[in-house]
Length: 322
Image (cartoon, rainbow, N blue to C red; front, side):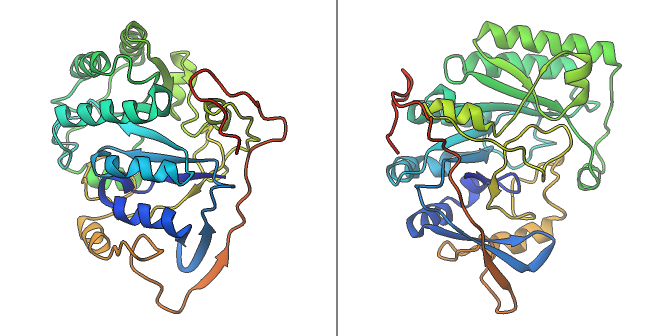
């Protein structure tokens, strides 16, 4: 099984001690986002956890723990977002120079195949148009040359929470042909630095621009990193157009203090602050503890590895013989 940590919040940035404790204990509890009384118990046995995909905009707090986590038998892959957005849209992030330095450290620890860059989302505003994004993309891509092999992009999807969080920001749009030229320029820059460009759940990028559709959690790609063959199944819980492999998310909504204005996972600053303060690194739940009125059900965890897995690994990552 693939663990996703997490599309719902930035666990590496804010909850690294909690995550390390979950791996040490080999167990995590996850509340149903739509029914707090329903809780899944997930046993994190390394024999069935094929990969842990981490999503973050600031991995620095996790960096000291990565060798210990991998030594416990949990293979890691990082989806690292360094977007072209400004501080109006991303008020809570470290300076770009610090984030680029973290990317370099990650790549040295995990290798360029296991640190995937997200230039996502692209949010057009009166003060941040396509030209500014192109300039920022070129600067970041040059800095990441040799540190990653893939970049995922998309234009922002304006869900209800996004619209609420973006109140006061003057959004704009551009005609299809103008955006298509912009995307072609991004692809040219990415190729110059050995980075493949893919589209995350964006029909315009796929259908109008001819981009390859991304699977941010790609079971086949993940298996190939370790010279293994994974049996993959599409994740039915994701958006239409998403090609991600089925995974188990161990995060919680309304718990990321970055404060990004385009965020779909936070409903209010008050909820985020309340939940952030309720985190106990020793608790099996990310937020708080069991109250006694929950129904806890064990979720079956099954490895995706197939018997016909490659035995001799790949040049970059020899088989672990797991």
